[in-house]
Each structure stands twice: as structure tokens, then as C-alpha cells.
Length: 72
Length: 256
View: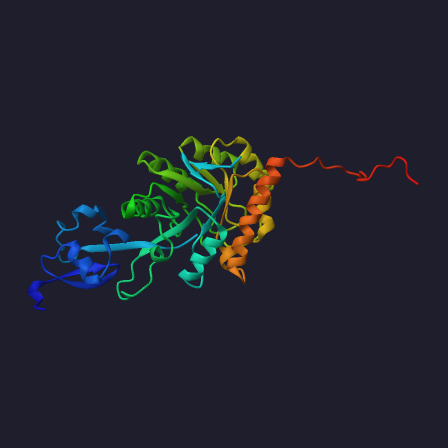
């Protein structure tokens, strides 16, 4: 990947590279994550599921993808 | 007649709510939940492991369409963290019924009631049905009810301690004054503790560690199910009065 075509985001606390212009749906596909099992926050704001394809990721974006795990 | 348990207008049959943490694996979690016959299970919200795409998911073992997930805010020490967690949980699939816990101290995991009340108020305004983990202080629980909590969940003893209900008087006081369900959350160590909670008149019990850390969690889950049922029946049957001295069970007349 050429650096010019890459956006370096912060994904769940670690740096992660995506193609420039990628949207959230494309990121989930790349990560093999099913939309209905997660919730996503970009730069501290929760993104509604129907907006994933419209949200384009930019360098330095802070992305948090969460799901349910066992807990008391 | 069926003894229906209602929280925020939702009806449940089981009065036992179980946590899903601390099990060996999801298979054991699912088996324990099944044995407990709980209708409600608490779950935590955490980051997805990006590096391990093959990681098993809780949802693959416990179908949220078949059992009600109760997202919690375990590990949150401020109102902001708790609100963020529950807003994310709601976005995940429309969860409105949630368990709020805002902790104040890592050693005791005691709730921070100032932050808890503040969070409850905000969440209720945002349309959440909030079940609240709290201290066993009747003034605090009244305040929680005033700001709209749909269930009051006082601790019996510190989370994960298994010490049993330490202050029965307070739990009874809280139950007596509350107009929403009172559920003992935290502190149950074995079946008799769950029974005591129910005998005190509580509407339900929430148990995680006592089941997950038993040597045989599946058997303990079943035991807790029976303990809650037993305590509930004893409460409804209304126990005998205590006496200082003996009262013979056989007639004393016509002795040979």
C-alpha cells in the first residue's frame, strides 16, 4: 500500500491502516465483523448502523468497536 | 397461580438473574445459564479483539432472541464512562433495559452513589429502563426510586466476596419502602444466601461468582434456581412466629 493511499486510524487503542476513502462498512468487512453484533464510536460519537456506509475514515480518527462479553 | 416477576413492564418467570462472567468458556456459561433457568443475564461491553478474528462470541452461545441480555457498566468509575457504555449497548441492538453500576473503589467495588444517582437520572431521561446496583442504604435507594430507577439492586456483600447478606435489616427496610422491584445484587455465596434474600421479601437475586466459581458451576446454577424458588415460597407462605422457649409438637394430653 502506498502511504498516500493509506489512512492511519486508531482502532481500539492501536494504530491500524485502512485504504483512504474507506467507510465503516468496508472496515468491518476487512475485520470480518458482523454489523449486528457490535456498536461503533468514531471520535467519541456513536455511529448509527445505517450510517456506516456514509462514514469515511480519515487519518487519526479514533475508532472504538465494542461487543458484549461475559460479565456480572 | 403463576408468580410473575415484572421489571419495567416486562414479565419474567424466573426471579434469578445470572451473570455471565468468570466461566471457563462460553460453553460452560451457556450450560450454567440453562441450568439456572434464568430469563435475564447480565453482559459486559468491551472492545472487540481486532487481532483474533476467530475469537468466539458470547452471542453465538447465548442467543439474545431467546434470553434477555442485561448490559451492565461493570468497571465504570464515573458517570461519563457508564453513560458511554450503555449508549453503546443500546446502539448494539436496541437494549433499553440496563444494569447501571458506577464503582467508587477498586478494593471493595463499592458503588459511588453520587455518580450512580446522577447517571440514573440522565439515563431515565434518555429513555433507558435502569436497574441500579447500589448500597444497602434506604435513603439512597429511595433517592434512586425518585429519579426513576426501575429496579433497586442493593449489595448483600461486596461483589465476588460470597459473604452472604451482611445487613438483613437494611435489605428488609429497603424492600418495605420500595415501589419497584428490589433485587439483591452481589454477595451471595451459596444457596442459603439466595434463599435468605428471597425470604426477606426481595423480588429477585442476581448471582454470578457463586455459580461460576463453584467447583461444579452447572450443579450450583441448578441449586440457586431451587434456592430462589424455595425462598420465594417461604416468603409467600409467611413463616411461623419465633418463640423464646419450646413448644411441643405432640399433644401433651392423654399421655400414657
